[in-house]
Image (cartoon, rainbow, N blue to C red):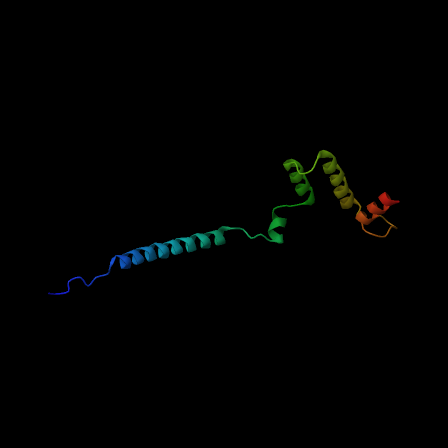
Length: 106
């Protein structure tokens, strides 16, 4: 008799099917990762400056989220504004923060 059953067994077909699903899954995953990489803006210092991230804005966002209360918000805002207006007092050495700590401790 002739050996008419020379094809693959069931595990061969199963292995081929699973391999095909894995292959196309990897192709689709690669396309998704590539598209996300190409369309996501960079997270660098330059991009944060372009988005106008300032200390005042960060403080306002923290206040809006409820991370700080109104007293801490007002106090920190005053410190930020005083640092913007008067970076260093004339005739006094040290940074404004060091000056503030020195006046509180004395």
